[in-house]
Length: 145
Ligand code: HEC
Image (cartoon, rainbow, N blue to C red; front, side):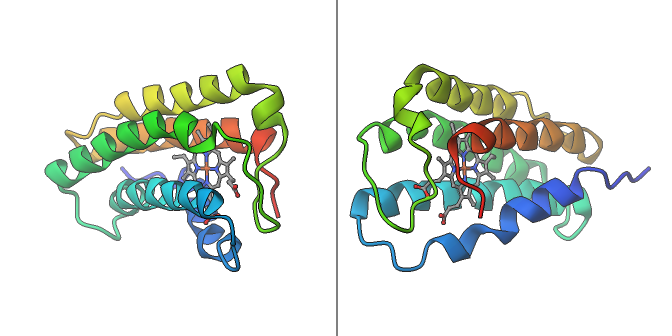
């Protein structure tokens, strides 16, 4: 059975990626954006398998999951210094509510860890929860353009 409810989430996350990046001057901001692009790529691997655009491959899915866990753990350090750039979409709330921000990173780590990559059928539920964890941080802490 195929259900496509998660696709708009995955597509929307992937679509915004390349644009924000252009013209970034501050290397620290560039680095944290690059981390997010890596997050997007790993998410797209799983999203592509859910959608059927990428053939299901349990090893590749497991690698994407491991990458996402690693990326989530790197988020706090990447954002800790209050770096700014005109192209940045980071909200000041990241630093005024640091505990909430790191909690959101932890929730992404848990959502990634909870993805059952053993089967195509279970991947979809994992992707939906992972997508919710992206929004759970982006809504309060990222300016949507
Ligand atoms: C703990 C917070 C947090 C979590 C969790 C999070 N993000 Fe982000 N993300 C941000 C912030 C903040 C920015 C804006 C950074 C900036 O512009 O300085 C961002 C930016 C991005 C960007 C734009 C990168 C660029 O080139 O400018 C993409 C793509 C992205 N996130 C994808 C994802 C996906 C996919 C997930 C979930 C799997 C996710 N993010 C989870 C905080 C988070």
